Image: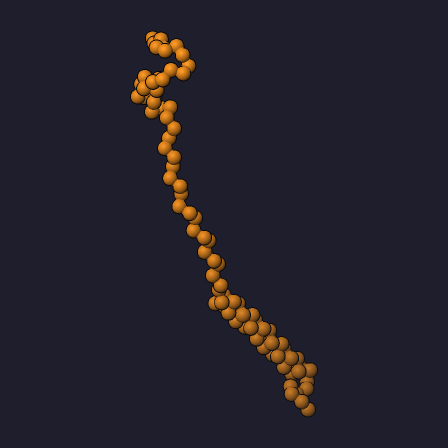
Length: 88
């Protein structure tokens, strides 16, 4: 059943008070949400000297193995060619 508007006018005062509580709760604006906390600045990327140090050691190790292989092959080649390895 529909109730007739008591004031029949668009600018009648007190219209909000005449609404049922459930309608008021549904129509009211929600309370503004609190502002979120300011974001923390991003953490700087840490410099990793240990990684650079480890990679440098690995490169030096590869170079040492390559030089040792080259020296071994030169000595083996000198023995196979019939001459003495270091000189006369």
